[in-house]
Image (cartoon, rainbow, N blue to C red; front, side, top):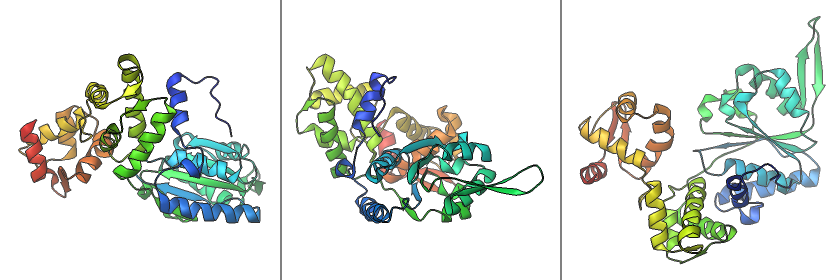
Length: 323
């Protein structure tokens, strides 16, 4: 389970260093972690594979990091695959043959499986065998190891009901509060060998949109700036200058967020406006706006999504008038 850094770039290495390695240094999602600790302890006592787990929620909340922690806590091998790359029964068999008994298979973007692959996984998940038709139309059952499938998705509604139902443990991951993000900031600045003024911790946390992945991305850019300009010491001036270069303001708003707000205000008179029209006006991809921009703007009360389209809230109008 050691991380192989042989061919990794410096950026890859820093990303891996920042990942939690056990439940002891996994911050947040406490309700889920408590459930998993019980399930893992019980399955290890029985000598069984952990029940299949479905992790849902927005990107960047630590689904893949948690999957790796689960594997380490189970003391088993770990295999990670992007679901859209699995196209056939043969692919499924090839992947599962690489998973040891009681091992963990992490399936990212599991809403991206085609129905044939989903159906193949049904029997593998329940019976630890895959049924295959051979030339004379007879069926052969190919055994696979007892394994734990951890599925991750931002779009559980795109999965078929029967596939979803085969996950015994299901949990929607929540955005992090500032206090939790502050703990991550402190822990990861130490991992990056940064000294810091205590006053910057909450500032960085507040700019991170409730998302650990964004915390870590901002910290790496702050690290670069502090290394070159302040002998690896992070104070408010360093944070402000580094994140100004990144186009991230004190509320975590980015240039694309502000462009979105400006277009609804200046082009569509505050809304309502359809997402396709907004995307065209912004010159941005519709999916990017729907998945990376709008959720945060809705959450902090700058826009509302109605049946007629997107509209600025009163708070959104006030911001638009200042831009």
